[in-house]
Each structure stands twice: as C-alpha cells, then as structure tokens.
Length: 200
Length: 280
Image (cartoon, rainbow over the protein chains, first blue to last red):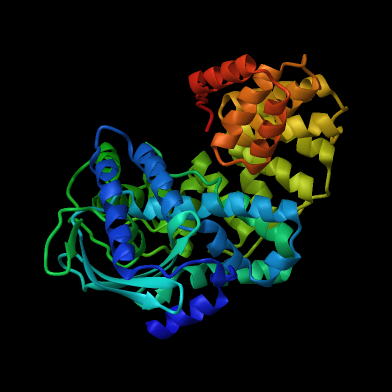
C-alpha cells in the first residue's frame, strides 16, 4: 500500500514545496468530518436521490482537489494543452468525477468506517488508513491521501484495496488521449456526463 | 454507516468511504413478487441491491423500463461492480423494445467505445431514433456528431439544425451552443440579437457559461441594450458557480459602476431563481 501511495505521489504535478506538512491527526478529523457533513444529506429521505446526490456533489467538490487529480490524469497532455483546453477539461473532469463519486455514495448506509491510523507521508501529505465493514462481506481497506493546500485540506487520491482511483482514471483516459489527443478526451467527457439515468 | 475512531464509536456516515467501497460491497435482497414502483422506491432510498432484485425479473420478462434501469445500475456501478458490457446488453434489449433513453445511452456507448467497439454508424442510428422520439440530449449529440464529423460528413448547418431543435425544446447546453453559433455565424447567419436571446435563455436556467456570455453582452451592448446592472448580475451568478472568466470580467465591470449599481446587481443576483426545464 505504501509503495502504491508513493508511486501516485511521485506523479502528482503540483510543486509540493508550496505546501506545509499535513498533520495526520487533522487529516483523520477531515475524513471523519466528511462523513459528518454527509450524514444529514444521506438520511434525508424527504428529497429524491437525485437531489441528495446533487447536495453530495457539493460536499465532494469541497473535499477533493479535482485540479490536482485532473493534472495527474492528463500527465504530459496537461503541458501541451492550451489554456482553453485546460479550462474546459477541468470543468468537464470535475463534473465527471463528482457525478461518478456522488452516484457511488448516494445510496449507501448501514456500513461502518473504522479509522485505523493516520500518519505523515513524504514531506507534505498525510495518509489516513480506514476499513469499511459491512455485514456479509469482507472488510475493505481504504487509504486516503490528504494534503494541506492553500484551499485547506483536500483529498488527492483514494486507494481501495490497493487500487488507486487516480491511477484508474489515468488508465481509463490514456488510450483515448493517445489516439485522439485532448479534443477526443474533451468530447468523451462531454458524452459521459450526458447519459440518462434510471427512469421512474 | 458508522465511523469507529480508534477504539471509540461515532455514529456517522462516511460518504466518501462509501464512494470507494461501493464497487466492492454489493448486496442482493431476495426477490419477491413486487412491482416496478417498489423497485423505484428502493432505489430512491439508496437500496440499490433491492431495486435490482425487484427489477431484474421484470426486465427478464420484457419490461423495457426495467431493462433500461438494470443497464444503468450496471453502468453506474450502483451497489455492484460496474460492468459496461452488461449495461450495453440490457440497454440493447430495452432499445429494441422501443425505449428512447436506452437508445440514447446506447448511441453514446458506441461513440465512446465503452462496453462495445466504437462504431459511429451504430451510434448515429440509435441517436437518430432517440432524437425522433424527442430526446433533446440525443438531438444535441447528433448535432455534435455533425459538428465534429464523427462518422458523418462534417456539416455546421446540419449541426445547427439539430442543436437548435434541442434549444427550442429548452435544453440549456443547446441554447448556449446556439448563442455561440449566432454570435460567430457558424452554421447559421450571424445575428447578435439571436445570440443574446439564446445566451439569456440558457442563463435563466442557471448555466454558468451562458451567464458569463450574456453578462458580457449586457456590458458591451451586443445584441441587447447596454445594462451594467444586469451585466454584473449575470457575471456574479456565473462567478458564484466557479466560472473563473466571469469572475475576472465581473471585477472589470464593477470598477465602472457606482456603489448603488453594484448593490442593485447584488440584490438581483441574490433574488435569482433558475428556471426549471422539464426537457431533460
């Protein structure tokens, strides 16, 4: 797990010298607080799932550093993209990430999150180790890479059972970037956010 | 979800953890003789496993809406690991049964090459069928296929025809796109009044890019009478949604206004309520 986090960290494109050391205890509280802020939304059955997910998107938006994740996902293509392409990518990628994550979290309840540990990682970040427990399934290890940025604490990556979400997104986009460059990826992201969801 | 901190227990739901665990933690409730609405209610409550258990037998016996929803569950990974191939399989069955939204999602999947091999001809075929069912997203997507020449000969005129159709029906992104087309004379004759009309229509629905553009038009008097108060109102609304360009423009516009004008813009921005469109 630590090796994977180190690998992801090595690819992050933001100059880390600009940020202070992230306090592990604060990072753990940040993850815990994320749940606290979400609980009211998740429990509010007076609004539709779509409305709950819309509210959760706001929470996720404030908790993840989508720009850093987006730069990591694009890698060298970030450097060659023009300003308009970068701006549009960040908007579309934010929508995609927020939509995807909010859909995943919108309906889940009855699980237990155990905060196992939090520790410093490299010079600037902290890793919060947690375990998800649900009856009838094996416990799932989830690690959170957190950085104290100029916008406050932000999640840079989530590693589930050894699989980095940032790396997974990078892999998902790499083939279309290789084939169709930035215009192709932008078009793909536009499409991904315009599908229809369940019908009543 | 409950959060256990160290050895203590806190009764909290950790949404972000659930984000990541969802693909690993699935559950299925034993199927009982329940109808489609029961599945919908379970889905709304976030019990995706139960929804799937209720809809699956309906889908297997030919209910097109249940087929479509099962496809969405697989595509979005709702309480189950995402499986695009299964999503395509169910959307294909629903589309063949005449379900318009399934046709649309299938069309996009063929453009994307997700769960199927990329095939623009099939994408066009499904999107066209969905568009003729009146789906604005399909009309807009067809316009984009013509705009970029995806599997069809590039034609800005045909792109504008499809996108304007969606714009007239009330689709904000299509309205914004038509604003740009009339501004630039792309696929339509250049017409700044029409451009402002479409930017304003999308802006009223809360679309930040359109709010930025109509704010600029009001500040310069392009296609509309110059109105600095309205300009700052729209730019503020866009900036409040994180639109960086609108934020910069709002600062420049505000510098040219009196304190009273700025206050009036702020008051109008705070009173703004987006118009809800039912076309989606």
